[in-house]
Length: 123
Image (cartoon, rainbow, N blue to C red; front, side, top):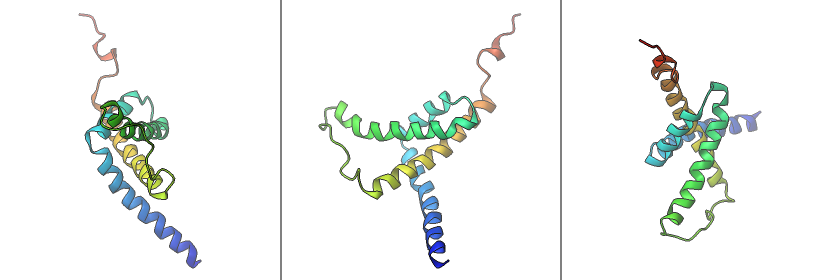
């Protein structure tokens, strides 16, 4: 039973730190652009998990490819790709994108008109 509490404590610490780290990464310009696009593409709440995962993949690819496309560096995979820290960062990004996309989707569904239906009345 003692081992279970240690693992549970580690998991809770990961979620607490993951949300903070995830927001730190998503709160930059790249993260906000990806989150807005993801929320725009999202059509229903139950797909938010897949859309957030897609946002993480897009973010991780963009971090590698933006310097390559700007001719600042040649293509190379992240040096820590096979280390646990890289995947913890990816999981933290997922948590951050999950919350930010949810907020943007909520705003989209509550404040923006439903496509052309709100403007379809003829005078």
